[in-house]
Image (cartoon, rainbow, N blue to C red; front, top):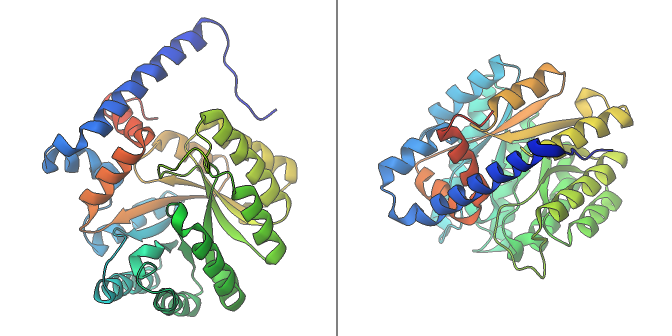
Length: 322
């Protein structure tokens, strides 16, 4: 019911086009180390707000005018010292203050390794609580992003702990390409009110713990979406995949959900026309807005680790990313 199908010559043409674009995107992803920084910057520009908080605020204002929400993300992860982690936390504090000052329809996303997870778990928790105290004071929200699999357990356990103290002001991310995610979702649902961003996942993981076939990841995404929304969780349906977008749209219709009970999410610079159509159709949509002076590391990592992201760059070059 929820799957899109293509038949006839059109499907053959589409298949060949997808294969060609996939090859191009893989070539670009593997060529990243040899591409000069200014060129990477040129192609990354649509996907990064800029280097400063002011850049992020400007982009969010532009989105808000169009009826689109945002989540701001200070670029940077895997810090190696307490000083670096505190500096990153302070930048995140600035984001929350700026959202309130400029009355933006936006919240904050953070990466655990950005603010101390790999240094000390208690130190990480202290930093998150500082941010959550500010967010709660502004009646705002902090999303704890999910990184690669060594950090899954500690991130989910920390979320469950913080959720008991901060309730609706904190959320987490689940990735449909991990085989464990259905069990993780059911555990969260059994433990209380849950706010998740559901995405496919971008990190390169071993096949033993992650689905590798596109259809497997899609099917698991659909299942997780159905379980979460069916059990009353708030879900940010984070995808650019038409199959999953259509599934989500049909699912919220079948469940009779109100606009305030879910949202769609996309990355900055990706699929503008599709994004705007979702909003025009009456759904809430949030755009992930990264900014910061570590844009180069962010851009190259996303392109190297996931050629499907490079696919969007390829499509943008040829004017096909609609």
